[in-house]
Image 1: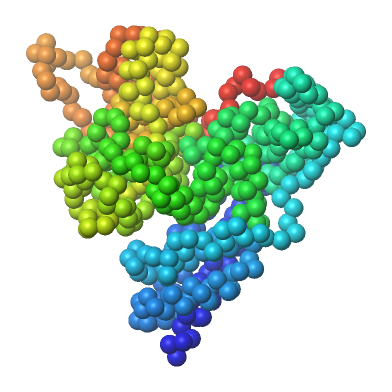
Image 2: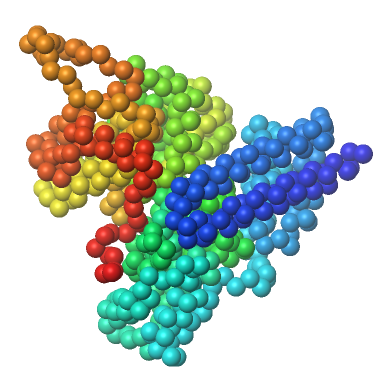
Length: 576
C-alpha cells in the first residue's frame, strides 16, 4: 500500500497544477477583450485575481493531498519517490519548470517550509537546458522584400484588434519616419534581414504592447510598440521604443505584471532575454505573471552566485529603518529585509500589518514607483559569509527570526527586493558634487513618484528621502511599505490656527489628531535638509503641500479615474 502513495501524490499534484494553468490562461485570455472594451478596472481586477489564484490553488491542493493520503503524507521518504514519479509525468510538458515550482509550493505547505532539500523537491530544476519541440511559434517573421511601409502595414494588420485602428495611415507614417531616423547611420532599411515579433500581445493597465526585434546581420535591435485605446472605439500606435534601457523599463520590477498568452514559458522567456539581456530570468518570469517561477529562478541564481563569489554580507547602505533591518551582498544587486522584533514607539504597526502591506503592494498597480518583492520562509545562508558584527546586529534586532548554527544562518521570514541607491544618499552626493542636473532630476522624480502613487490610490505615509531609492535608470522608487495607505482612507486636513501664541510655541500639537489624519503642510520637513533642495521642490511640486491637491486626488480616485502612467516619457509619443 505504501508503494502506491508516491504515484498518488505525483498524480494529485499534477491534476491540481493543470487546473491552476487552465485557470491562469482563462484569466489571461480576458485581457484583450477588456482592453478593447476600455475596461481598465476589469484589467486591474484580473491581474489581482491571477496573483491570488496561485496561493489559493496551491493551498487547496495541499489540503486535498493531506486529506487523501492521511498521516502518511508527512513521511518525507514518500516525497523522494513522489518527486521521481512526478518527473516522469511532467517530462513531456511544455511548462515543466512551472510544474516543478508548483510541486515545490505544495511540498512546502505540507512540511511548513521545513526539510527543504533537493532530494524531496526541485531546488534544482530537472528542466534546465532541456530543448522543447512543441511546434509552437513564439514569433512571426517579417522581411523588407516589399519595402518598409508594406512590412509595417502587414504587421499592423496581423496585430489588429476587434476594434479598428484610429488612423492606420498616420501610424504607418509615424513608424516609418521613426525607423528612418533611428537606424544606425551605416545601415539602411534594405540591409535589415528580418523582423521577429512575438505573436502574443502584452496587456497592462491601459496599454497593449507589441514586442519584437529587428536583425542587422550579426546585430539586433529590440523594439516595443505601445498601442493605446482612444476610449472612443479605436486604437493607435502611441510610440516606438527601441533603446535597450528603455525597453528594459517597460519590463521593470516596479510595474504590474503583464497579461500575455504564453504556451511554452521557457522558450518565451529565452526570446525576451535575447531582447533585454540585462534582465534576469527571475525578473522576466515575474514580469509576465509567473512570479512564483521568478522566485524559484532568483533563488537558483543567487545560490549560483554564492558559489562563485566570496564577499561578505553587510548592512545595506542608508539610514536604518524603524521596522525592518536590511542587509545585502555587495556583489549582488538585491537587499534582504527582515522584520524587527520591536518597532520604534512612533510606529503604530504590527508584524501582521507589515505582511499585509507587502501583500497589498504585490497586488496593486505599482505605476513604476514601487518595487516588487519576493517573500521567503526559512531562507538558509552559509554562516561563513556573515561577519560577527552583522550577525550580532541581526540577532539583537530580529533575534526571533534568526537561527544560527555552525554552518548556516536561517532566517525564518524575509523579503528580497532589488537594491537601489537610497535617495537621501543620492541627494547628498549631488549636493557635495555641485551636480545641479542630478539634484534637479532627483527632486523632480521624487515629487512625480508621490503624485503618481496618489493617482493610483496610494499614500506613501513616511515620505522621507531614506524610504525612496534611485534605480540604475535614474527613476525614483518607493520601497518602505509599513505605513502605506489608500489615499481614500486618509483624512487630509489643514493645520488649525492657534488660539493662543503659547500653543504655537508648544512642542505638542494644539489640535486633535486622528489615526488617519494627514497634514500636507507638514511635508515641508521632507526638504528641510537643504535650502536648495527646498527651493527646487517648492517650484516643481509645491502643490503637494496644499491640502487641495490631495482632496482633488481623492475625488479623482473615488470617481474611478485611472490615470495614464506609461513606462516611457511623454516626449517619445507620436503626434496624432
